[in-house]
Amino acid sequence: MKKFIYIIFAIIAPLALVSCGSNSTTGSFSSPNAKVTVSQVVAPKVTVQAVLAAAEKGRYRKGELLVKFKSGVAGKAAASLHQTMGAAVERRFAAIPNLERVKLAAGMPVKDAIVRYMQDPSVEYAEPNYLRYPKNTVPNDLYFNPQQWALSNTGTFAGGTAGADIKMPQAWDFARGSRDIIVAVIDSGVDLNHPDLVNNIWRNTGEANCADGIDNDQNGFVDDCVGWNFADGNNDPMDNLGHGTHVAGIIGAMGNNGIGISGVMWNTSIMPLKFITDFGPDVCGTGADFCGSVADEVAAIQYAVNNGAKVINASFGANGFSQTEFDAINAANSAGVLFIAAAGNGTLDSLGDNNDLTPSYPANYNLPNIISVAATDQNDRRATFSNFGPNTVHVAAPGVYILSTIPSTGVSMSFSSFCTNSFNAGYDFCAGTSMAAPHVAGLAALLESYYGQFTPAQVRATVLRYVDVLPTLQGWIQTGGRINAYRAVTSLLPPSGLSASAQSSGAITLSWTDMATGEDGYKIERKTGSGEFAQIAEVAANTASYSDIGLSASTSYTYRVRAFNTIPADSLYSNEAAATTPADGSGGTNGGGGGGGCSVGGRVNRTSAFADTMVMLAPLFAVFVMSRLRRRKK
Image (cartoon, rainbow, N blue to C red):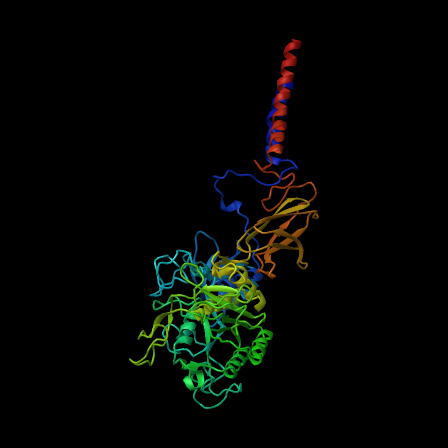
């Protein structure tokens, strides 16, 4: 009988240990090749705030939602909610029970619908029907590859070097601009009807009728529907030189429309402000027909500031400090407007000048909203004509063999492109720091659209920090680098996939996916129950987990995480994740293992796993010893 009891004990004890674990359990272990089932995946809690925050960063189909009802919700209840919303179900998904693709009522904003659906207790979540794109997005514009080497250099154009570019296809995976961001092009005007620009031209919605002779919005300019011509004092900022149109195309030629080229921003609002025109050599001086005055420039700056421009491109300059010009740009700074200025093209035997010694204005004004831009070529070398200055020129961008838009509407056979002095109506190659500056202006505006919470100072700092530092530029310009759109756009991508797992009655482990490319670390915030979030820790860059210890048992905690850098700037928040600590002495929750939690193979600590194995074998060893002793007594 005793032998039978020993055998039963020997069988039950190891099974009890296998199924219930010890307090040293820190997580669950699975083979790298083990198949993860749906039941093993713990989805983060979905909140209205998290869905709306994600919607701000993504592109999605208008008028549609993906709505998932909670398990057990009757079909009639779901149908009743859709009817109340004026929506219709377009598809159901067998792989995801209770998920429906919903067509919203006409005119219903997606974000409003999300809030209304998620207010209903039967809805697990409602989110936009997001759009997805191939990675390293290459537009279908006719001349993009290989002519637009500045945006994506394959090394096949003009003897260039592969990769000597600003990494636009990679950046377009995340941001392509917004027509809410206005970029003022203060220049020789813009071809308002150019097929690659027409839909990205700024429209003044305050002017009800563009030909009624009335200043409808009372801003001091009559019928200023698409900007203003300060050189001639009228509402027609059409380009009669081509320079401004070329600049505008670099910033915002419509991308992926099957024609021509792609701008840095596929979507934007170009505000044409003309102050340069054909005044002739009597006004402009010997050898020059086109020029513009500081008085007209200042009026254009004031117009841009007063009418919502976020970025001003200034691809012009000359010697001679102007206090009036300085004051106007400083006023733009006070209004939160960035001013991107060409560093200038050298005048001495086609070699660049040192702006530290021979200033070029407006690029040389020491103001915090100015970015002074030098030019590089297709091999990442400083263009020989480009001005430089280790103290006064901030960054470089492509400025040689730059293909962009030139006037194509209303031009005659006598039209001569200012770029090549040939008839190339529509598109032409140009060179100069005038072409480098709009690459930076486009990037700054792209950052304005993507990181909506950034201040202009943070946008400027992001442009200057996330450059590709090049030996050919070090010692010549302040940053020693050429802009990198991908690094700048992705520098503070918010962490994704945040999850929380209770490990014991006093500890919760967080994990997330590190998405940022230029963070200095992560800030972790926590709230207890329905309280307010408060920061509890900072962790280093490239970190993707954190253990929160010293917690209270049987308590619910919610977390969120965001990236930060020393610009200083913070990313948007991750999704929120919650976990509840178990009671003292009980196991962890949310699939985390946890002290005393019962799970097969729930240990990842090799030392404790060895000890547990010894404990499991102890009863068998005891049976063996007792059996030997009984045999000896016999």
